[in-house]
Image 1 (cartoon, rainbow, N blue to C red):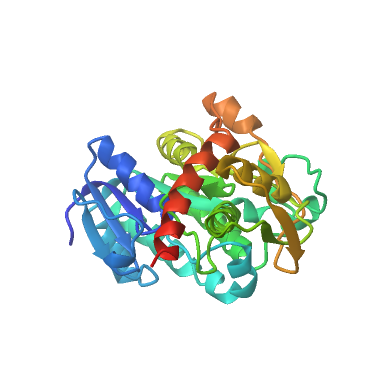
Image 2 (tube, one colour):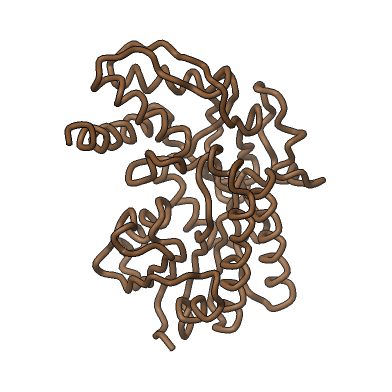
Length: 327
């Protein structure tokens, strides 16, 4: 059995996981980082951690990951991506119930101190997200349930599992509903990227090629809020170490249309664009985060503006695109 550590991060090879590991290390924590991907496919690999390639769909792998116990276990392990991936891979998304369940079982048996589960705004009822001018979603709006097919239903089910492991077994579970997390060191091409990174990639290509026309799915009037990675990591640790046991929104409340997201990034890039609207997966018509409860419980909410976050993200994505473009 692996030795006890301060923190275990499942899904550490992913975008959020890589940033979370870095933050925990900066606190002086001992960290075990686990992901199904080979190490050379991790977005960030940190040398001061115990890095394991394991398939956490397997219970024994989860037991190895948790080891003799940990002060904090962060379960970010799941199969996910942007709307194009989510809408076309519902069964794969649902199979994330295996690492979700097995990590809970392993954490219970090892008597870990705190167990964090990364849920999603995709748990929210679709019938409350049919208009672009959306009322911000409150935590109570997940019920009566009508979650995003596949991905959202798995997240909602696993939220309930966390609740019952806390009630029945005393495992201290904490849950955040992430709202569109973005930033550097993430997926920016290949089909799993989300709207902010896809936008940055398309604008970067337009800048490099000297083109104006940029394709966008749908009419671009669908609305979202986007949460910068630094706010996400801060909130994740705050929730894990706090006393609130119910799921909480972890999202920016700064609403924008997808059209305006493209125009914002074009302005950051210093170019003019013309949007070409094409058919493609769109998801819900509108989604925003109601931050009443996070402000009530923690006196805090994500505060990094979309312009500030997208500026940093665009600079990083531009460098990746330029390196590929110049090959």
